[in-house]
Image (cartoon, rainbow, N blue to C red; front, side, top):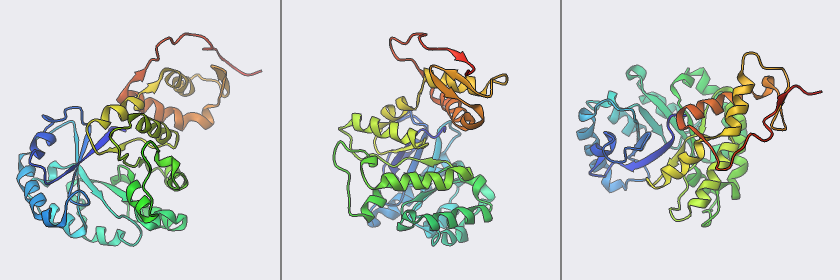
Length: 304
């Protein structure tokens, strides 16, 4: 929840230290320094050299800082770098049942890093293979180290030969069903899923619609490709006053087994996970009050 809008930053940038320290983009909750798709092959050594210089200079920060290695070999090189313990974890691209072993062969859990694997290969379209990977993660004891599974929307669309049109959301594409299936596969097992990147900068209203749909699918935490996207995303992460008050009522220790609030049916036995998520989101992002809100309809009563 506290990752918020995670900004991808190519590790070739000369201002990594200013970003990592919070001097630049102080609103960032989390940043991902990328050595993969955002870096051309010819610039990879430059990106790694920038990280070699950055890591020993890292100070403690409220911002969560991650690195996306290009492949398992680069992850191994990163783990040998002086100061790598200052990084919170790694975002693992092209993650699936066939690459899991390659990542684990170089993975070193002794430094306390977290993992955020990206589901962006053709295997993500196969429900059975995702179930196999979910079970293998549990067998390897990795669940506690995984902050969330990130959905690589653009890579998945590329596999389909599709790019969303301007003004469209990812839920206007065939990925709508894929996202829903991933949620059904991983959420009941206790994994969080983050939302795909939105790759247009001039349609904030479409980005807002997509974030609303993300939340309806249970996705919190969205990849941002530009700082201008962060306030749009995180404004939608604020909790509506109605939802906050309903969630509070659902989780109240003396609440009824079934009750009516604002003409909606509330049953704590089936709504408690939603309510807990709402209150966690409110704690991080706050509660938004819509202009003109009133007390109308705020009845809290048992049915019958």
